[in-house]
Image (tube, rainbow, N blue to C red; front, side):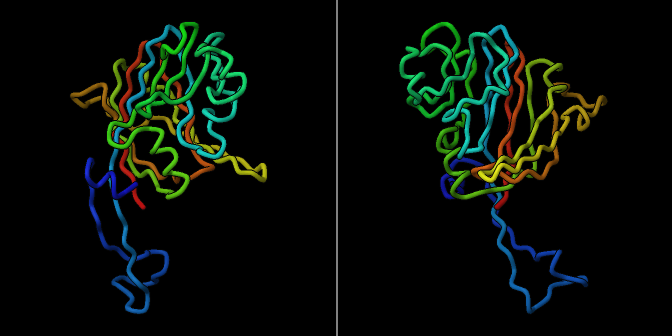
Length: 221
């Protein structure tokens, strides 16, 4: 994934020492240097419907694209039935969640195959990005969030872990705490974070009705 993003997004290859392995300032010649790769990509989340909708990002092994997740279904029409499931194949594109031919994630309502919400990654496709996150985990260290309306900033970003042994935990981040009321651009928030992403980790995030949200995501591996 990093090789692909290198050609289409910001990239920096930096050398640093592991601070946890040193008890003094300056490099330890007996400890090998770590290579940290940094890159960025965009996520564009577009809710064209009339209802607020909660989406799931990453979490490849148990993604709501593959397995129904009733806990995030808040709509009577956007029911998030996985398109690839038996029920999804019989639903004729109504109330499903899956990927379109260009790799964008889409969820439909009552109109067949017409998205009420979509998630795109222009640099790598969201489908490829999700699958890559399970094979080559990374850490999200920053998000520049751009919204259409200021109310969207109040929606929390929930980072979760859910593994096959049944263990789970959540870490809730409020973008509003990073918002500077004195800043000139009122619909942009720069978020500092430290969220590992792999095949058992992801996000829940609510996108308000009629809202277009863009995350420019800085990652490190």
